[in-house]
Image (tube, rainbow, N blue to C red; front, top):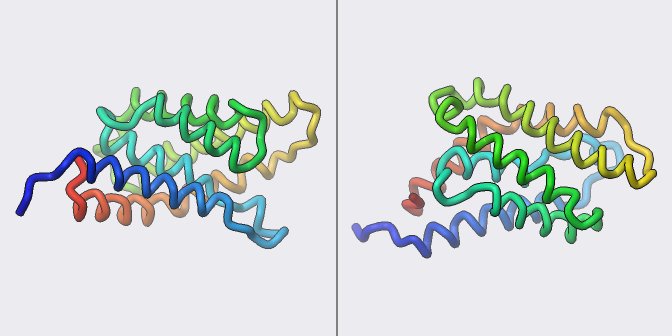
Length: 163
C-alpha cells in the first residue's frame, strides 16, 4: 500500500466541494426550493472538523465567493457567512469531534442557521424580501442529512487516505 499523497487528498477535498456546489445549483421544484439543504456549509463543516489543519477560514471564504458567483448573490455575501462558519467550526472542532454524528447535528443546525441568517441579512440590506422559512427549513433538512453525509465523507476520506 502506498503512503497517502497530499495531492490526492487535495483533489478529493476539492471534488467534494465541487459536488456540493453542483447540488446547490441543481434545480428543484418551486415547493422544494426553501427546503434545499445547505450542501456547501455541510461539506465545509465536515472537512473543517475532520482536517482542521488543511481546511479553514480561507477555504470557507473562497467557497463563499464561488457560491456567490454560482447563485448570482452579492459578491461576498456567502463568503462572509461561510468564513464565519469555518471559524466557529475550527474553534469548536475538538469538542465536536468526540460527539456522535447525531449529536453533532445540533451544532450543525446552529451553524446552518447562522449561515442562512447572515446571508438573508445581507439580502435584506439590499432591500429584497426575505422569509423566516428561508432560515429554518434549510437548517432542518441539513441537520437531518448530516449523519449520512458524515458517514459518506468519512468513508471517502478513509478510502482515498486523505489526511
